[in-house]
Length: 359
Ligand code: 13P
Ligand code: SF4
Image (tube, rainbow, N blue to C red; front, side, top):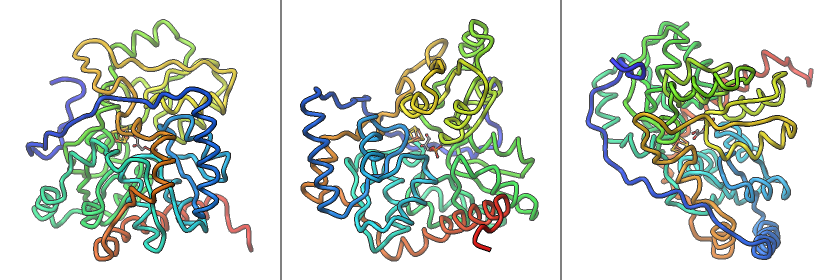
């Protein structure tokens, strides 16, 4: 058995889906400047705020920050959009992030630069197959990762993100719950091993993180023995086993800022380097290898769907009001429950850690 074989997975044939080539937007300085100025005007005119994920183009991340918007991981993007008063949320990221924003804010308009920006985890977990899987295991609490469709969330008891999954599953395990987990088998297995919970896993994977290679990473570490290794938990076990820090995108950025090391090897989408470098300009960041034995390089450490976001498409969306996310009221009413459960859980946790400052 290969070191990265996961044993607690459901044995279902997964859907075959198309992975587009990674096509980053290319702009010269004049076009970038013109688009940026236009988008600033349009955001103000439309009473809109831009929320971007760390994996998107640096132009978008910079613009989000410069216009009072936000750049973060999937959990905090949802939180920010929910709390911000703007009537239009523009979500630069992938479709499930836009859907989550819409589900939490049904009265707001949610726009995205490209509605075709999917996610292999979402595509690999069709709602009908997932519902059948849940029906076969009625004794299990259904926990789904944020990277799923609204219909899959609607079938779940809890939604989690990479930054919150350990705490939520630990909590459920302490209550004696058995868990049905979807869709990422690597993240699910990491949580299972670290909590001791009884977890049955859907067989999905992120096409970006599953390409990181344990053997080649070990060889890179050998040439940089002082480096700290930062790994997103959607990576295979052989890669996670070599990590100094395993965490969500936000947690990995915090690690670069706070750990007293000079060099870091980073196993996640390279879009994150923009923020990491900003957080720690003097530090050296190396990409974890995706090449080597059995390499497919379908993504080469950059999500092809995140790469669909760019200034041209963003300006077009704001000009036309196109690419609006739609989730039916009936579906949203069901899908919001597992999302709210997570937001309430993490707010209660914060309260426990920091206490009530208003008191
Ligand atoms: P984060 O929640 O860590 O931002 O991860 C989202 C994602 O899609 C990672 O591939
Ligand atoms: Fe999905 Fe992976 Fe892209 Fe994240 S990096 S959006 S998990 S395909």
